[in-house]
Length: 306
Image (cartoon, rainbow, N blue to C red; front, top):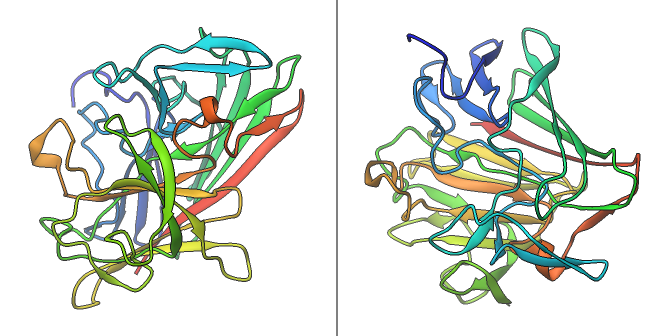
């Protein structure tokens, strides 16, 4: 391509047939392939990231209603980055430039410093390592508070899983979560309910079908190592992709992409978004982590192609 890519420098890592490209803008994942197969529904090098694809969501994932929240008795106002819904969405670092800290053939570590902005008066040093191990892609994020006062922090990511088919409707989803958050028309939680007996129960594998999903799930079932794993598989079981999270991530947002701005991109991939806190967490306080000056929060997740 001619000129700079809209997402800045491209950092490719490889191991065997596995290849991922992480980008300078937002420090996010643009593509992940195994051989000629797409594992995530990404975007072209000459395109701007759309639909949050692969982006890093710090210091909050998802939405804050009206961008308004209160901390230590002070009401703060974030920029309304989802103006049509009057929400602040997906944090502060997703459009910032990130720099390389370490790099090898199969791994890259990027870092970003988020300085105080209107509505969030703390400085955070964010560092993410993307590493291929021959089986899958592992992602480790560390958020360090370099301010003089304690900072409320949450984190998330926004990958879209794909089986390289035309649509996700026939894909079989396994989502080991007992609880779904109920939301209003602005995608802000109003409560929660057990998934049992509802259309949101994917604890037993079943096809996504025509169902539209844009909800956060919690009550995650974990294995002995603390991981929760979501599986998207083809109807015949020939292809699959797993996304796992460790205990730092208490929520998973699942999005079928029905409201994406570009109709051609809708339902092409299934967003499975690790989140340490639910939507509207800055306002509700739910699952926020208070990080002391000089201290850090760390979380791990990953993608394993079948």
